[in-house]
Amino acid sequence: MDRKIRIAVAGCGSRGQDTYSKILMNMQDKAEIVAAADIDPEKLEGMRRLTGIPESACYASAEEMLEQPRLADVMLICTPDRCHYTEAKAALEKDYDLLLEKPIATQADQCRELSELALSRGRKVVVCHVLRYTPFYQEIKRLIDSGIIGRVVNIQAMEQVCYWHQAHSFVRGNWRNADLSSCMILQKCCHDMDILLWLTGKHCRRVSSFGDLSLFRAENAPEGSAARCVDCKAKDCPYNAVDFYLSEYRRTGDEWPQNVVAFAPDEEKLMAALREGPYGRCVYHCDNNVVDHQVVNLELEDGATVNFTMTAFTAHGGRTLRVGGTMGELYCEMKANTIRVMRYGQEDQVIDVRKLADDFSGHGGGDARLVQEFMELIRGEIGVSGTLTSIDRSVESHLVALGAEESRLAGGKPVVFA
Figure 1 (cartoon, rainbow, N blue to C red):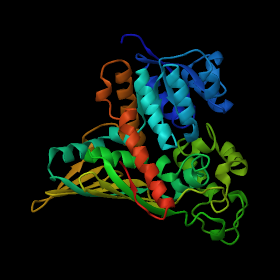
Figure 2 (cartoon, helix red, strand yellow):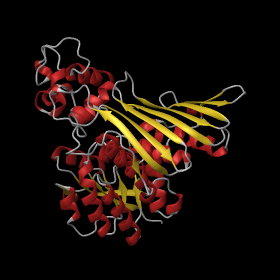
Figure 3 (tube, rainbow, N blue to C red):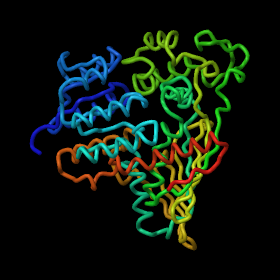
Figure 4 (cartoon, rainbow, N blue to C red):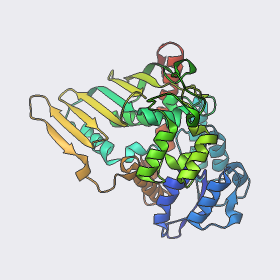
């Protein structure tokens, strides 16, 4: 395809504007953002300034934009979780191709329906499972597929959410309440369910899970705590929002997560947001109900087993992975970008993934590579079978995550997949 791909963006927040649109602005020989929508006028204006689109192409909501005749070739759907299903369905029915933020939808039947709708209408839908695109996980995939550790028998994986990230996103933030967004294991960890299935190349036979919200409750509030951190008299609280966000702003400027607390922040705007907005609330006095720790056990189709842990109770964030095979073992640390290959009876080999690529920005380098491959797909340079996260491939991770939540709510009773 010689002409530029025309793109409409639904949701102009951290992912829609600060991530994908900024990447696309560096691809202006191939792509042109022609319309945008957001319920926040400040974010919408920021998108207009970033892209140069006219005010007439700015819409007060994704619904308003979708009421128009087809405006572009592609729509990016980067709105809150519970909006994805209705917006993606409406966009597919208008024959948009989609770059769809995870989760696909919050219910299993909705995920299946969107996948079937995309197929029936011949539309291309790529789900933003960015981890598949990182040099780190692609190297692990290469090693597993090479047979260097034999047949995979067991995997132990951990997502260290980190104490402050849990407080920011899942206690104070947009994903704090499953009734307003989705359950933790879907919203945060469908990435992990996806990557574990992709690495093994196997389907899940059954899943069980345990987890709870153990800390971020009113009964655990320290003495002297207040509804807002600006009024708090509790001492030595690691979750004090004023201390955290101001220190991060002074250290890194208007990067994430400060730019989520206040759009285009400075210290004055941050303090105003902490006095009035959701990110200034005490973590023990919020309306959160998602878990702060959860374990998930998967039995795969050939009897291989996977144990996955998501926990808020870590000092630092990152993912670790231990893959046990019949001939050897891999130990992988994403934060360090290292993979230790331990073949039984032989000397260990350490692979420094930082030597395999130049760009590790944005989810370990996954964001830019995702957008690049999506553009290649839309331009016809690769087929649907050549893309890593087409919707039909991504549905199973959502079904496993939702099955895990069903099991957790049933006290760990296994959920069996047909």
